[in-house]
Length: 153
Image (cartoon, rainbow, N blue to C red; front, top):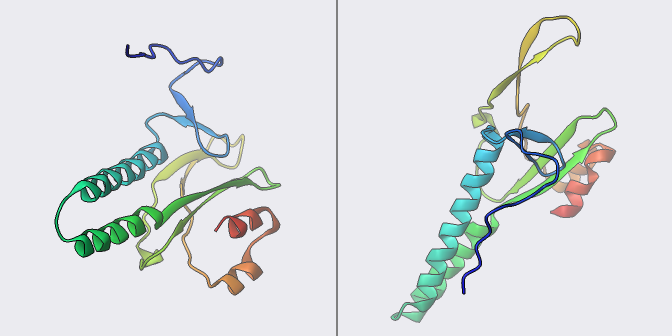
């Protein structure tokens, strides 16, 4: 007998929003939610390919090599989580293994009344920058509230 879940209750209402890692609420059509879903779908697709590869017949050495490549791809991008700084700002971090030019980062923009109470709307980037550091340099640059990111990697 199949079990079907027809209702899910969070006890606080939907209002078209969802939680991010770290507790922030955003609209369900927010670009970050879309990005999480895209990475998750890619990871699932790689898992399906690995399963088919494991059940395939033929050259065992080739299958092992393909599985090693796919396993590496699945582990190269992962969410380190978020930390809330004393200013109230929440900082999110992801780890990435590979070659990428941080100068290629293109952030989506959002509008915010700034200064608060001024009635003037200004545009700000969702992601202000991306940088790669050697561990020793990162340890000097990172602020206290962001230290858990270093331990997560």
